[in-house]
Image: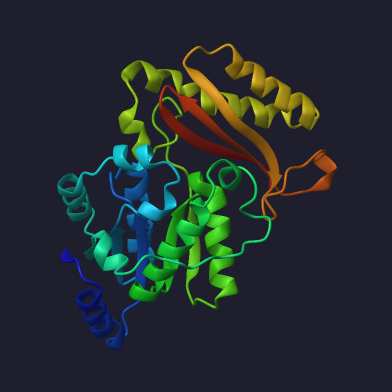
Length: 281
């Protein structure tokens, strides 16, 4: 695996590959890699000649400085995992390399970033857009791979590519779950064993939502979810929304859309977890 810390060196290396007709798949990450990330690497390996993975904990997408400080950083372990998966290229710049001067870009995603994660994490998606656009311009991949756990992020990144005519295909990849159903996330490493067991309730609840979506009203489903978490001492529901998969706007009735996803954010102790389930597509 080739490793690069500077934009200049990475670009030179990738330019030579492109000149030889090689296709490039890209997996952007913030490290603390787990099976979910590795599944993206595998999918990219199947569809491209060369796979580039980036590891960069992007400070400007954290609206909570404490969350940034606590975010796990495991570069040595991450590198070993990437080598085992036969990843071709690792790009792991530092903050100065990515932001030699403070970022001032502002993006307009209409209503896509006004709900759910955007509502509860002000500025988050602007920070995501800044770093993703910069990474796309550095790597210039044919395809980029994103996990469906961060569904709202994937929709916004797709809009970013359309708005700015970035010639990259956004490839959505299935959520990878632990044995108890908990969606794999780097943040899971901060859960105690007890909390990890408790967190299984998130996916259990989403599966019940999918069953209920066939006959209960949206209001009834939301009330069910609120009750599920109200009785949990160490868990706090931040939001639960049933939205159109493309506009991301909350629905009042099932008749409003034929493409519907349920999205949730829950605090388990001091760790914030998100998940979703497609109800109709």
